[in-house]
Every structure is written in structure tokens, then in C-alpha cells.
Length: 399
Image (cartoon, rainbow, N blue to C red; front, side, top):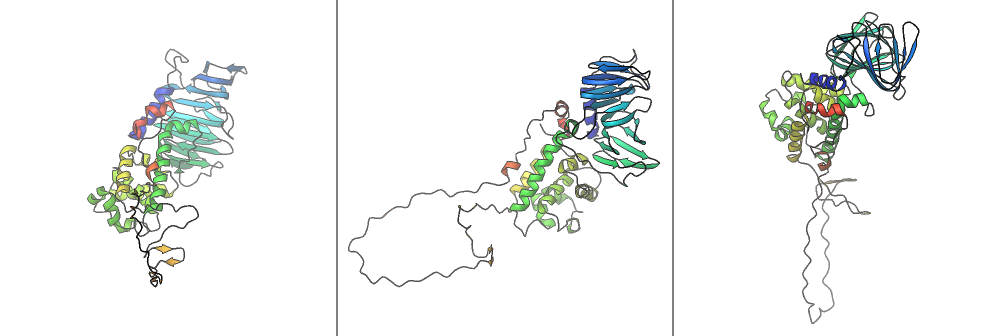
């Protein structure tokens, strides 16, 4: 599974810890803490240690990350990452045990096997990937690619990858998860979703620009999209019943291209999954990840579609002048009709006895309006500074 490689790569980068609690590594309820900054460890026996490099953590110890960041290697390759408060969040504080308890702040879990932890009385079971857990007034979990089960006072919910759930109070989880709301300034979000963020921004710009420059009568029929997306010719199930006439044509173009390149389920199932996730509020980059579609082929397909579309590229008028209007076009006051050619009487004065020398009009080159979508169709994404994003760049197929 493609997203599974995301967590695997993150574990490779984050998991280079040279020491453990014993020769066999941390045992059940133990961890090896590595700090890049400063952490305070309150021991079960009452001692208080300030850690700036590394330390062994035992069951009953409380770890608070007060400066920088830190990671805890548990048994079976499970990793927990803590950090000093980001934004309005408190510093990460974790009580270690067989079932760790997040007392405050944020926690990043990378769990190749199931890990069970507790926050504000709610039990979270994280399995097969990475997830961000936050503890404030309530509990929030954002699944990057892990499968997460939330049990809040017997109310059990599932949070699939690329979704999140906020539990405002014990026993009151929402009925369903919602699309993950990533934050560009969050280093953990950028680590796992950096290229999806960039791709999503690119697709958002293409969709808006396409809608603005498309002839208002186009982009509403299966025939139109079969023309600009030839891959749809092989989909007999693609028909008018799938096209929402209220949806912007640019949105339909991007979603149809993702559906065409996806392979999870039938075409109709993919169509409803793509637009259903999008209508729930998912950014386009998350929709692409959810369908396991590579970014470069997708951008190439959309660029070809734009190139074959009847786009109305109109050069802007000169300052202080209105744009020229042609017969049959629509102006601010309604349809424009041709004006009659004025007629004038011949001059009454006699023409001059000599004719002026003929002049040759200067040669001019017609101005070709610049494609307004060109800036957003460059398929090469900028470099991403996160180390892990570089390792997992193949996820979206973008070099």
C-alpha cells in the first residue's frame, strides 16, 4: 500500500537510536528518550531529572518536553515524538506505562504494530502507521496513514488515514471522521503531507483558473469531458448522471482526472469517493493520496486537457478604456449589436491638384495573450525542505 511506505520512511529517519533500556531494547512500559532541546523527567520514586541528551524511561515516569523536541523508542519499534508547545498547544507531557497516557500537548505516534494509549479517559488504538494526537480541553487525533480506533466511554469510532476526529468530552465523539485539516506551519504535517500540500495548492489554482477562462456554456456534459480527457472514452459508466451541474467545471475536470487515473474500485465507486471526500472539505492533495494516484501523471493529464479545451483567453483592455466588444458578445448592458456604418456626403471643396506621396503602414506583430493558466501548469514542484518528505517523494510520483 502506497501510504504505508510513508510511515516506513518516517521510521527510518526518526528511528536511528543507538541505545536502549537493556541489551534487548526497551521492555513493556519502558522507553529510550532522545532529546533535542530540554525535557523534564519526574521519576516514579519522586526524583526530578533534567534531560538534554538521552535517558531511560520506566513505567510510572512522567516526561515533559519543555524546549525543542524529543522522541521515545518503545518496544517492538514503536516511536512516540514529543515537542514544546506549538502555537496554542501546551508542552507535550506523557505518563509512561504499559498503556502510555498523554496528559497535555501533542504527540506523534509511529506504530508499525498496534499501540494503545489514553488521553482524557479516551482510549486510542493506533495501528500500522503514523498519527498525531493532541490533548487540550478534549482529545483530537489526526491519522496520516494509520488506522485509528477511538473508544470514548464505550462509544467506538473509526478514523481512517487522511482523516481526523475531535472528541470534545468523554463519551461524546462525533459520528464520523472528517478530512484531515493540515497546517502548513506544523513540522509533523509537513513531514508526512508536504508534497500533498504543494500538489493540492497547484490543483486548486488550476481548477479556479480553468473555470474562469472556460466558455460559460462548456464543461457541463459527458461529451465535453470525453473530449478533453480521452481516458474517459473507455469508461462506459461515465454519463450525465455523474456530473453535478452546480459544480464548477474546473472542479469536475480535476476530480474526473483523479478518478480516471485511480484504480480502487469501479469507476463509479471512485467517482463518488473522489467527489464525496472533496465535498466533505478535503484538499485536493489529500484526495489524490486517498486514491493512490501519482502527482506527475495527474498534472500531465490535466495540462493536456487544458490544452484541448475551448478557453477564452481575453487580453486586458488598456488603462482607462473598455475592452473591445464584437457583435454577438455580451456587454455590461446586454447583448452587443453591430452599429450601422455612418455615411457622409462627399466634400464640396475641390481636391488638391497634387497627391501626397504614398505611405506604407508600419509592420506590426499581433499580440498573443498570455495563457493565464501557464503559471499553475508547470509540473515541476519546488524543493521540500523536510528530510522525510524527500525520502517519500515517490508517494506522489513527483521528482
